[in-house]
Image 1 (cartoon, rainbow, N blue to C red):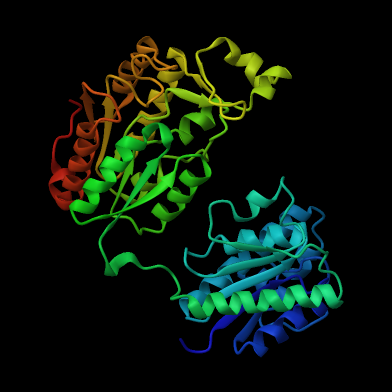
Image 2 (image 1 turned 180 degrees about the horizontal axis):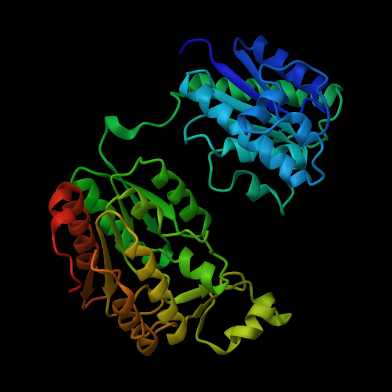
Amino acid sequence: MTTPNIVILSSLDTKATEAKYLSDCIEAQGANVIVIDIGYGRPAKMAATYSASKVAQAAGSDIDEIYGIADTSIRSDLMMQGAAVLLRQLLTEGRCDGVVSFGGASNTTLATSIMKTLPIGIPKMVISSAAAMPTYSAMYFGSRDITIMHSVVDLSGLNDLTRAFLQRGAGGIVGMAAASDGQIDPSGGAALIAVTSFRFAENCCQAAMRELVRRGYTPIPFHAQGVGENAMENLVAQGIFAGVLDVVPAGLSEEMLGGNRAARPDRLEGAGRLGIPQVVAVSGFDMISCGPLSRRDRGDPLWEANKWAERKMSKPDRFRVEVRTTAQEVAKIAHRVAEKLKSATGPAAIYVPLKGWSTLSVDGAELFDPEADAAFLPALKASLGANTKLVEMDTDLNSESFAHAMVDTLLDMIENRESWSNADRESQ
C-alpha cells in the first residue's frame, strides 16, 4: 500500500506533549499523521490538523460555547459527534488507514466511542492505563474491532516507561495499517451468512453451516452470549451479510429477563431494518443464564424476586447456571419477537421445533417443560404480522432436518427475493 495515514485522537489541552511524541514515533515508522483534537476543557497547547474548534463546528456547535457548558457529558458528546464526522470524512477521502489514541479512563472512553463509528476492518487502537479496569474494559471495545494496549502506567508526561509504551503503540498501529486492506469488503467471494450459535444448539448450527458451505455460501458464526450477538447486529448494519440465520436470538430474552447473556435492546432489528432476509429459531428462550450459584447463596435480588432457586435448573458447575423460563415469560418473549419481526422490511421466517428448543429442554433433560413451551405459539400467532412465515416442525431443534429446513428457506429468500417480496406469507 501507499504511505499509510494514521489519525491520532487526543485531548491536546492536557496531552499535547505525549501526542507530539506519539506523532513523531508514527512518522518515524514511515506513516503520515493527522491529529484531531478532542479536548474540551480549555485551549490546546499544540496545533492540530483539526483543532478543537473545527471539531466543535463539525458537531454544529462552537468551541467557546462548549468550554462554557458545565455538564462534561454534554461537552464530551458534542466533541465525539464532531470528531466522528471528521473521521468518516477522512475515511471517504481515503485518508484514514488507522486510528490511535491514548490516555486514562476519560480519554479512552471518548476515543473508543468515536472509533466505534468506523466500519469493521479499519485498524483501531487505544493505548490505555485503564484497559484492565474490569468495570470499563468491555465498554471500551464492546463488540467492535478495537485493539487495546494496556500501558500499565498513567500516560502523563514523558519518561522512560511512557515513551516505551507510546513508541510500541506507534509501531502497532502502523503495522496494523500496513497489513490491512481497509474496510472489509466481502463482495469478492462467496456470500456471507450470519449464524448465531451456542453449545446447547451446537448440532443444529453445525449442520446448518455445513449445508450453507455445500451450497456455496460462507457462514460466519457468532457466539450467542450477548456481546457476540451485538457484534452480529453491528455487522448486519454495515450490510456485509446476504442473510441471517438467527438460531439463538436469546440475547433478546436475556435482556428482557435479566440474564447474563443479555444483548442490547434493539436485538433482532438490524436485518429487518435493512431488508436482509432472516430466518429465526427459538433456541435459548427456554432458559435464563443466571450464574454463579453464589448469587443465590447471598440472596441476589433477581434470584429472590424471580424465585429462580425454585425452578428447574441446569448447573454443570457453580459458575454456569441456567434456570427454566416460565410459561408467562415465554409468552412475553413470543410477543416481543413477533413485534420485532413485524417491523422487518425484508423476508422473514420463524421456525419453532415442537420437541425441544435446545439440548436442555428435550424430553428427559433438566429444563424439559412442554407446558411452558406450549405458551409460545399462541402468543406468537396473536402478534405475528403477515410478513413473517411461521413454520412448526415436529422435531427437536438439534435435528439435521430442522437445520436443513431453515437453510432451505433462507436461501430461497435470498435467491428468489422478489417472489418473496410479492408472495402472500401468511403463517402456516
